[in-house]
Length: 312
Ligand code: NDP
Ligand code: OXD
Image (cartoon, rainbow, N blue to C red; front, top):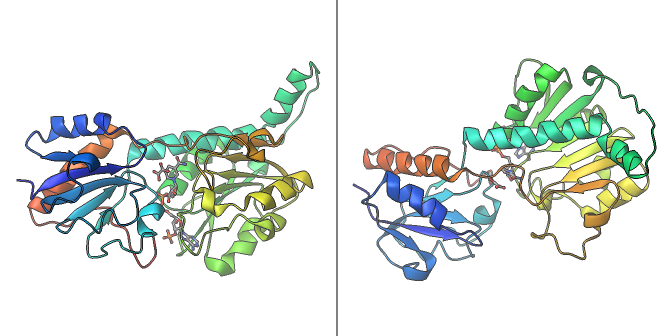
């Protein structure tokens, strides 16, 4: 039996699609929304996406918070988050699949110079661009966790030279691994296409900056599908305008939705997508929520827990 009610706390998300899956899986569960019970003391479970600061600390009998995203930066950044309440994030094969598709698409896009080919088509110019085979292209993944490793696994059969950078040491067959601040320069200096899949924490905020770009070889491309807070936008524009970087794909931004006035929308070397690299699948996510509630009923801890000391 669930220990109490479940509150949906997603800001900017229609919750019906999500709650309908939950109702089907656990018909007895009392499901509330922010409008009809945010402060109730009988709320034991909360499903959250970018909750307003203070919203979770107001729930005095919470047993667990489920982040609707793999990234928990907006929740962890709330200084009032009640840290004794476990925070469970999304680790889901459907999310990994979505991110893998996005990374493979964009690695191939920049490697095969599709940006330049499209420009040639628009100008009605017939000109072959011959690109090196994948075995000569070095793809470096900043953030070599669940999503970074899934992307590497999919890129491997295409023969790219792969490397990954993480906080702790890793050993993954067919991938050169680097870790910590000491490993960053060597990692960057051997990366032609940089993919950012880091969590946003105080240590990684602003990591895509002028210094990082200068450490990449001339002509490198950058794909940021992690968080907008990783990127210093002006530094990227400067590195593209000076031709040090060849191109960039950006899925995430400091301000979302990206304001109409942002120069990123129209920059000739930037591809913009609307935080759509990988979207949590409602049915799969709710399966995880229900399994966790059942686990907790049996006295077992929730899975995929965030470590508040690390911030991810
Ligand atoms: P994981 O926690 O599984 O992986 C994070 C990786 O980053 C780990 O390898 C970790 O190292 C590394 N890392 C963290 N901090 C540092 C640091 N200071 N220095 C070096 N390495 C560091 O996260 P996921 O792979 O599941 O997700 C990554 C991010 O992707 C999410 O946080 C989210 O922001 C973003 N995301 C974006 C989506 C989109 O649609 N655009 C969709 C889903 C997620 P270690 O392994 O040693 O801990
Ligand atoms: C996530 C996201 O973190 O959608 O899952 O960005």
